[in-house]
Image (tube, rainbow, N blue to C red):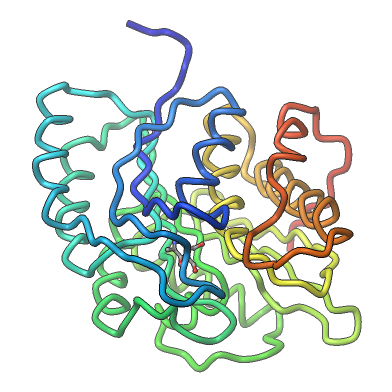
Length: 290
Ligand code: PXL
């Protein structure tokens, strides 16, 4: 029965403290009127960015039974969205999940969560990078940050790549399978400390860019927030550049709402203060076609 509420299969870890992965994705997509069906890959006490001694339970062994039950329920997802994985072996399990649940009318988003700021996260290794290169072929849309883009293409991390280089990297990733490639956290301008998001859509061969003024602070979880808004926005019928604008605007608003408070950045942006803005019309639009 069509209830008018769209469903996303969200394949990510649950980190109890720190506003990343499912702790951010569920409130964002719920606020956007979309049902999140969680398929947890791991349970951690906190995310791994900036915390030490976190507990980590890898759920690889329980995912098969979990998915078998969903298969028996024949759930029809409008999108399948995967992110942080607990082990490289999970890629085979999730590939099978996609083969079963992918239809002509839904879309698959893979956020190849592995690295940031030039380095792999502490639970990631080269086996994950290698398997991720194969896994992204299954996606309609991928959202690597610039560091992950370098790992996926086996290229050296550059500090300030020029736009033509990023465009060719996005095209190379798209040639591996995904129709749309969105590269986040691209260092843009040393003087003005700007970062940008650059996207390539192979369906119409167009490239888009949204720049954001960099506030000198690094908050974990912003990649998950970014991609969940892309998923929600596309499910609501927005075009790709408007979805990019909505995500960048929301993160900028979230960082501005948080930066004035003196608390550990590792706790993430103060999502609870700004969630309501997801339901406001987009007033300022700054995308460019490049
Ligand atoms: O935000 C990406 C992410 C997701 N899940 C876990 C993480 C990170 C990044 O550090 O540690 C557990």
